[in-house]
Image 1 (spheres, helix red, strand yellow):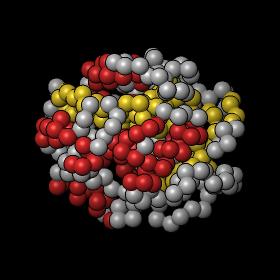
Image 2 (cartoon, one colour; image 1 turned 180 degrees about the vertical axis):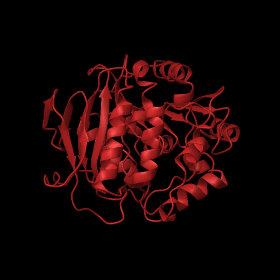
Image 3 (cartoon, helix red, strand yellow; image 1 turned 135 degrees about the horizontal axis):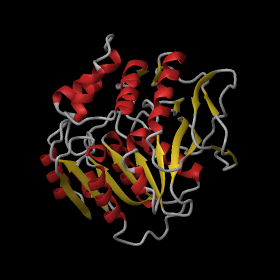
Image 4 (cartoon, rainbow, N blue to C red; image 1 turned 90 degrees about the vertical axis):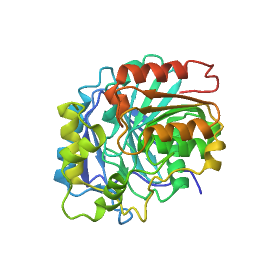
Length: 347
């Protein structure tokens, strides 16, 4: 599979979403770029493969993006928005931290977008250049133009984003589905990963519980959307989610349509052979109140099979532990990343 970006920019007559950040940079596959720190940039869409994930209407996309921008007001440090063209669509990401610092890529949980990381970005960006991606095919500001059909496509998409940013090697971390993407990339491109962090990785070590599996598999076919409050409780339990983030989450459930899971990627646990083959130093954190699979059994599975593994059971934390226990999780991550030299990682 070719990892070069061969798609042209979008049709400027079809406007879908406005990005309001503290500056936006557009990078092409040839690494040409423009930068305007005061600009408001427009992300546009164009005709693409049928059956993709995406918003059901322009009005719904606009409402969601307004809520996204409101949640980004919680971002405690300066940031810059980027658009990275890839063969799967235009990837939107946010970058914070010193430009010359070691790069750290963050992948969010399903349904949550880059804004999930607002409780963590301040600490993580002090000594790292942090790139927080809106996962292709998920609610957010990325625009999908081709399905991520399998594990190879998922790794290929990350390859292209790293290439677009001019990054050879990076530290990579992911929450929930983002943790699955992280380990998948580690297995397929270990030469590009310095260290990996898995935060309650979903569908990675063990299967989902039956209710969660049914929700994720059947949601594209259900004519009536599930209650956002009920879905939020499924992931967070009684944790008091910030109201701006909760509103953005609810609008994603209301307005976003996922691709057919029979045609696009669906997270499935990696085999014991694959887990034993992990070559990259890895940190695994799981909350002691994990809700969507057996957290303790998953932790034991990782300890038993993954070489070079650091691990911890995080107290008083459920599935989105980086949001529920940000100070503790930040410290675990930073201690792990700082344990050894990061020679070879460039931003």
